[in-house]
Length: 413
Image (cartoon, rainbow, N blue to C red; front, side, top):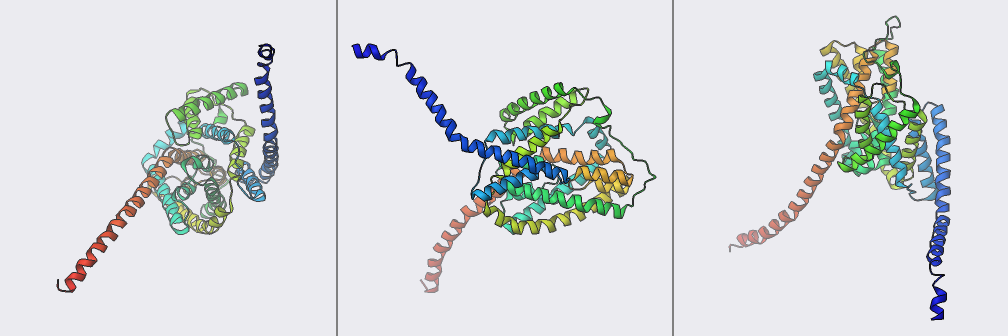
C-alpha cells in the first residue's frame, strides 16, 4: 500500500517524459534529412539565379531540377522531398496560370472562333500523335509520352504529370526540349518569312493587365492565399485530375475574372513555386530513366521539328482563310513559347494582342481538355491490351483442340 501511494504522484510525469524523449529522438533522427533538404534548396536557389541571369527559358524550373538530379546521382538513389513541397509549387503555378487569362482574351478569340478551334484541334491532334509514335518507338509508357508532347503550358503539364501516373522527369525533359526548339526555330523562321517592318506600328487587340491599376500587394497576397486554400479543397472534393493544380487554377480563374482590378503576382513567389516543383521532380531521377530517354530525345527532336514545319503550314492556312497578317498567323500557332512569340511579333509589326489571344486560347483549351483526353486514351489502350491478352489463351486452346481432330481426319478415322 505504501508503495502504491508513493508511486501515484510520479505517474503523470512519466508519459510527459516519454513524450519529450520521443520528440527529441524524432528531431535528432530528422536532422540529417533537414540538413540535406536545406542544402538542396540553397543550391537550387543559386542555380536558379544563375539560369535567370543567363536568360534560360523557365530557368527557375530547369535549374532546381538539375540540382535535384545531381543529388540523386551523387547518392545513387532517389531522394523524394516531403509532399507538401510539391503541393505548394502546384498551387503557385496554378494561380499564376490563372492570372494569364482574361475575358478580353476569350472575346478576341471568338472573332475567329471556328478556324481558331480547328487549328488548335489539328495542332493538338498532331502533337498527341507524335507522343504515340514516341511511345511506340522508344518503349516509354504512353501517359508520359502523350503528356510530354502536349503543345503548351509546359510548367502546368509537368505539375500534373506525376499524379496522372507519368514519369515527371521524362515529361519535364520532353516538354522543355520542345520549348527550346520552338523558341530557337520559330522566331528565326518568322523573321525569314516575314521581314521586320519597323515603320508599321505595333497593334494590340487585348488590353493587358498593365493598363489597369493592380490591387495592393497585401490584398493580392490575401486573395491568392484564399484561392489556393479553397482550390485545394475544391480539387479534392470534386476529384479533379491533379487537384493541387486544377483546383487553385479554376478557383483563381473565377476570382480574377470577377475582380475589377488585376491582382499582383510577385515574381519571387512564382520563382519559388517553380523551384519547389523542379527540385521535387529532379530528386526522383534514376539511371534507368536516363538510359531510356537517350533514344527518346533524339527521336523527339525530329518529331518536334516536323511539328514546327506543320504548324507553319497551319498558320499560313489561317492567314489565307481569315486575312490575318502572315506574322500574326504564324506566331499565333506555334506549339509553345508565348513570351518569345509576343516579342517576335512586336518586332515584325504584327497584332500582338491577337497573338496573345490565340496562344492563351490554345493554352486554356489544352489545360481544360488534355488531362482528361490523355487519361481516356491511356485507359482505352490498357483495356485493348487486356482484351487481347485475354483472347490469346482462348485462341491457343482452340488450336490445341483442333489439332487432334485434324490428326484423326488425316488418319481416316
